[in-house]
Length: 262
Image 1: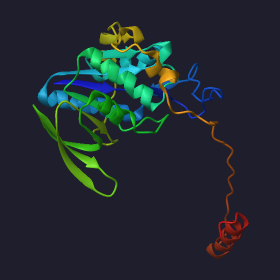
Image 2 (image 1 turned 180 degrees about the horizontal axis):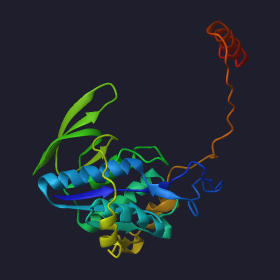
Image 3 (image 1 turned 90 degrees about the horizontal axis):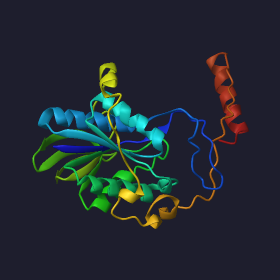
Image 4 (image 1 turned 90 degrees about the vertical axis):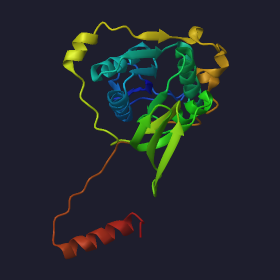
């Protein structure tokens, strides 16, 4: 089975500056990591490969340093990695990102199964996976919490619908987005790190795609306009009260009245 996992490099800290003109995060010079949800997606792909055989590739979009998360995926056991990197991809919203990734998939020739993490910690939209599936005209299952069965031709999975769990069967090729907890991600292997340190990463830019219309990529292809964005206020106040339960209840009541919660 030919499996692709879409991964992303996200900030490893919550103290990230924002470009007030473009509304995008300033990622230069900050620590980064693989998006936590994507670790579960990679592990899901590796588990499926162990069961039915095949290959696992990862794809990410970003600047050259985004290749670091591909190296991390190599250390987990992934076979190949593809980096979509071009200045014209910068500043993409979910629609332009989904389109760019879908063009990368088409460039590869397609897959039996595409796996994405449910969402990213820097965007939290949970839209990129389903939008990719629409661009590729393949079925998809979101919020997958368990793979029940997978075989040549179809996949059966449990989909978390908050109040219910739906059992869904779809034909391959398809795309799924996975929840945390579907599998426990394995730790990167130092032995694999040494073995893959010189492993080639395929890099594609806009010139490598079939559709090279710059209006579909990056800021030019992003219909979402950010009106205002700013870092969250990190000022926090803390009070510690110590007394009998009767007095603490009265203090809490007075405090809630002061804050106009009651």
